[in-house]
Image (cartoon, rainbow, N blue to C red; front, side, top):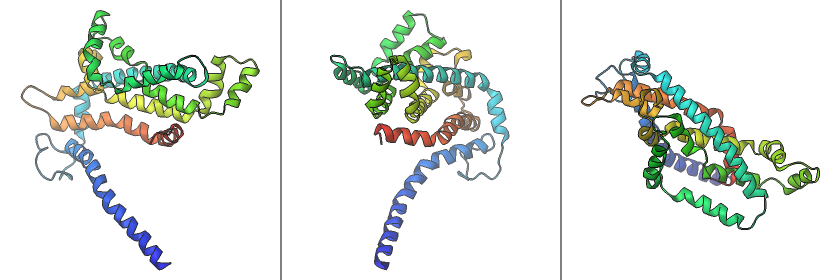
Length: 276
């Protein structure tokens, strides 16, 4: 018995010795970001590097007022909410078709559509930019929203959740005369809420953290999102690292809080879809 306990304890210690350095390497950049945001202006590169001697919390108010962060936040939130709702709506429609409606070549169409996830965004960014330009959508909300309203990854997550529902529920509703629209939104969708939330979290994090596409199509100050708005602290000859780090901390709060509050549904949704 004691031999078994000592072996178990040894395994736990071994795992801790492996995990703790990895956790430290992952957390250290965030620790440095928070530390840099609390240092006095112009002293970011001076020691101590992780625990400053003085804490200047006014950097956050200066960073917030140094650029129209309120406008950046509202732009990002508006775009993220519209994109997330669109991806869930269209993703649920497509996932229902791929899961419950039989037609010739259904599985081939599904796998061909999923294969688009293997195409790097940078391979299609030029034709996509030209298409947006032809529609005269540059520097508009349309350019930030319409190219992203459908997502193959969201369809995959929702389809995997839908096919886990016993077919008897669908057949019973069909026998009672329920339409596909009713079955989807009144029966299937509520039963797959964890997967829906998982897909929404993925989409929200992607939109909130995206920099490249908004940088290309929305250079107008009134249309900048939070990630491109942080450029306000980068000049031609000088970068205000203290204010930039304070702005980065502010920009990181919504995704972190969303993940914390949705963590239970997020884990449940991943487990239901078979993703690890």
